Length: 565
Image (cartoon, rainbow, N blue to C red; front, top):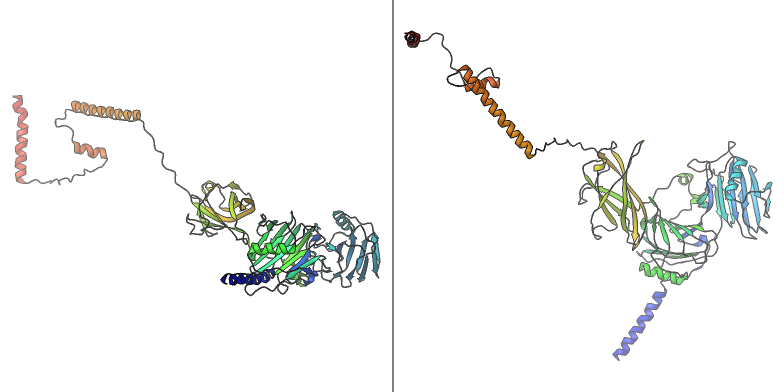
């Protein structure tokens, strides 16, 4: 009976788990691009945007149209500023395509000579326009003096010129064609919907981390996807695409990500991360389960599956309440350069080997010292990166820059103490003899995931160096044994000669008591006075002294007499 009870409990547990497991995924349905609550899809196209405007205040705009046969769209230029509008298409089959145009009298139309049907009250000038983009820009520059904008649009429903000035800062009048987001051009509003878009979403649990999935099917022509994350919450982002798809992610500081493709992280410099997931299936349920398994999550916030016409798209990730449409952004905000996201790698300098004394950027370091550098990186989602320093150099600042390679020495640090960090040290001795004191220390690094490494870019830090002047030591003469013996023998000869000279002087002068050492020393020292205290000399001797003196004189005087006798 007990076994039956256990079997019954196990079956009930299975029935309980099954619905919860199925509720982890969601079934995507066909939606318009404007109906996706979490991710906005914008197609990236070829174009340019300059500050060119003619002397008569007339702008020149080119619309490059990619249109499906039988389509119909409108161009509304009623509020447009004075301009030359050039409409061209490289679509091979233009039969049955109708374009409804409404414009004011200050708009001049030049259109490609094709089977497009135009419905307009304004005169339409058909011309044989070049089909090559570069040649078309060159033709417009020669015909009208320059190009204000070049915009490529796929299957539009409507094109509306807002009447706002079409120029863009910074000031440049040269149209350089490159990949762009056409929706950022504030002087025109593009109305179009992307086809073949499937999406589904669930209400995230209270306090749960959001998980967003983007799936590009194998049959898609997309090969480059730019993802701009606009959120202050930490989210998980799972990106799946065909082999060869590249993903560029902006604002990665709040994002954990996984992908079966290469990911490029934008910031201080470009950093490429190799694939972290292996999956080849583009089936929605399998992709969702792979994402849940990778992030160890229990629910999906949003799932997006898209097959756009072009090969490049931009995804703006964030709830619609938090993401503002750039078409309704003020002119000042459009012309202002956006702030850069937090750099991926940072380098901090230290003055001590224990890395406890950070070096202030304004502090000058003696050139005979050693500095210690710590290069650290952000934690990129669930990917653990290893930072490898490849080479380092210093660049002087000034009109004549000097570049010197900087040999470095790796400093040991365990992964638990230094996660996502690499430590090295440098000697500044080779900067001792250089005139410059202001340097940029720059290191090239690689980011490694597992056994695969990719270019991590370069990290740079300013360094102030002051010269250390060391007084050279006095030269020390090294005497050999023969030199020492020679000096000793020379000293011996000098001593012998001096003694012989003194003996000769004694014989010649006949001095009976020898040399007066004290007087000789006084004379040799060059001192006018003897260091010995002298007794004063009395001019008037006492009577006793006089009598003794007379007696001695008398005796002295008598000596020669007696001797003569």
